Amino acid sequence: MAVSLKVEERATRPRSLRNKLRHEGKVPGIVYGYNVESTPISIDDHEFMRLLRENGSNTVFTMDLNGKKVNTLLHDYQADTFTRELTHVEFLSVDMAEETEVETEIVLVGEAVGAKAGGVLTQTLYSIVVSATPDKLPENVEVDVTNLEIGESITVGDLKAHADYTIVTDADEQVAAVQGAQEEAPETGEPAEAAEPEVIGESEE
Image 1 (tube, one colour):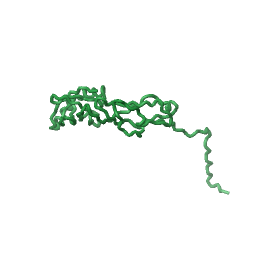
Image 2 (cartoon, one colour):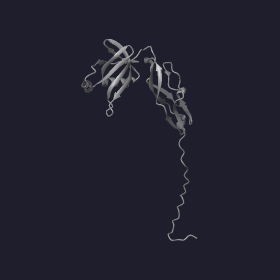
Image 3 (tube, one colour):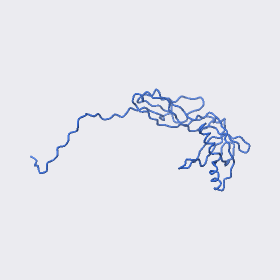
Image 4 (cartoon, helix red, strand yellow):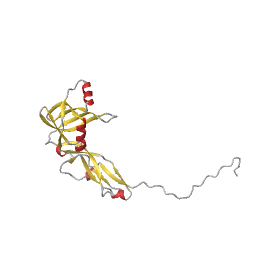
């Protein structure tokens, strides 16, 4: 899936210019990669965040650079430590006919029968690397844990093959498991014997 993202080319210096952009609600960034020269840009912060919420981070962002249509993927970003606002973004220009590798989120679906029986479902892997053409990249990969019994686990190798993408992550990586609940030591209900107090001055025979 591709969405249109409006960008403006920008100067790289002075540094005060980048600060000015941020005050105007814009984020400085850069585009580089397939069939495009490294180009400094700026984007509207609110518009970009809206597109991310609606389409996900693995969507293809189509932008116009000097009258040329460029298809890109969000490659990296920097955010303020305290406000979490974006301070810089990097877009990678891609060939829509060539496969690329990205990391995508794992989402567990269903309620494990082992959890219903008193076990504890634990997710041990939260993302995997997949390979696909840019328009087929998934935003997430759903893993059904419904049939997982106590003592059983699901690995990457257990995931179903998909026509749109290939999973690159090692097949032996564990995704989720159901463990038995921790057993507590039984209570007898009888109070522990109190030690008899020692009488000072009493001789031992």
